[in-house]
Length: 325
Image 1 (cartoon, rainbow, N blue to C red):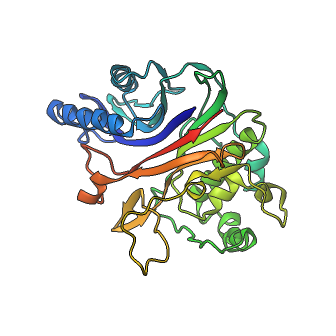
Image 2 (image 1 turned 90 degrees about the vertical axis):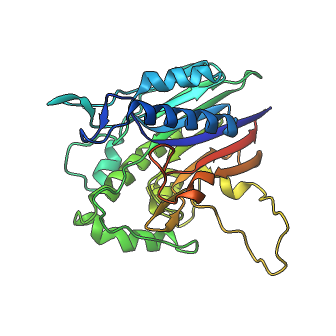
Image 3 (image 1 turned 60 degrees about the horizontal axis):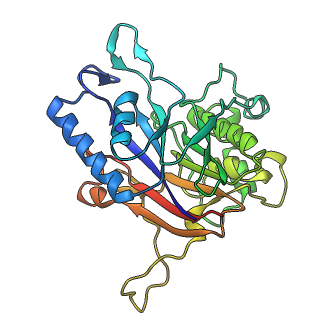
């Protein structure tokens, strides 16, 4: 049967009278209603069976919104932290999962101690957002594992390495070695430990696995190796993946192709100072990578405004349709 999966960064989903991070940053009732209306319409357009959400502050409001749209099953495994001096200000976001199919269970994912040691992390470690792992039963009785994640963002604007398709893992490790050993990029180190901990969890999965995420890192990044590539963890010379970027396992539809067009550029999911980047992904396990029917990026709102609107989102949404036996 064909199942659609989506990842959707909601961009400060905060119901009034609450604020996000600072007292001044909040929606009026009119703005909130406009944002909720846009999200509802966008979810209808995506028409996904299972959706992973990032940047959630108001959990109950999102749960009710999803229920109105036919998503009877909803999961969030954490609560946003509140400013101790002002209980109407949220300090942290959480993740959520909405499904048209039953959620059988969810698992608390722990950080990996070996990964903390490997990356020379000296402070007390915690995931920047508590990950979701849900076991979902499809109508054909197949059980799947669905992860929702939002890895550590680079708010400090620390230097981040940009790699190309042909950059080897060995080169990536060599280029980042000094920065990691000397704590020049703490957010990169945090993100790599988060990805490594998730790798250790996912590699034990015995059922089809889908990973929905705002990775907060670009294509070909070392974060993707830490999440997907066995070679990163065992220092092997040969790449061996447990997760695959679904984008590369579907056939792109080309309408009225230009005769000189050599390749299709991947659609960015986020922009920073007019530079487009892919930071929202859907990864799948080996048993699903050859069953991908379509992979679509919904970015019409970013074509109007690359920086996004608080009343919409600053991320594109990604939908992947998979034929799951």
